[in-house]
Image (tube, rainbow, N blue to C red):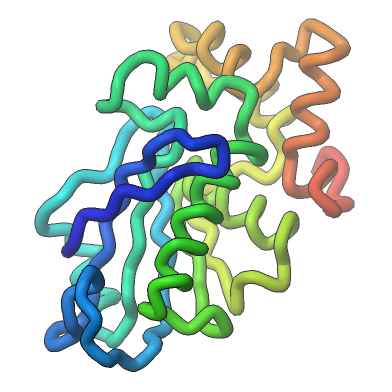
Length: 202
């Protein structure tokens, strides 16, 4: 695993981690390389983070010949309150742009094959997969969504009782369903409604 610092499209610094299969040259070097297929592994939460060090999912995928990229997009924890707050209202927008910026940086270094990109994640990471496949369907060859919400309206409506303490945080992050602006934001950022989707409220 190698650490990478990538600038977001608005200049925010993004800490990323890239794992390469055994025997591949250091991504910071100039050695000749074969462009690898790559899996973008998006963490859940989103209020958590990826860290440097042994990661079983990275190793499992790298063992099978994939480069693996994890991005601490805005809204991730561990980088200060402002970085977390920068994710408010940015589901399906700047948070996804951060992942795209990191992918662009790795592609530009000639590490991976842009025609062989996959995106994978669980929970918020699954949402990011659905968002990527609906916003930019030409970018990824495939995606793996693990329990990612496709409809933010119904996600809010179906909040279990043990999420109640996080209601205000969710409203700031996703949109406040008690306001017309918030409801519009929830619809616009739902992969199955606003982002070219058509699944309605199913």
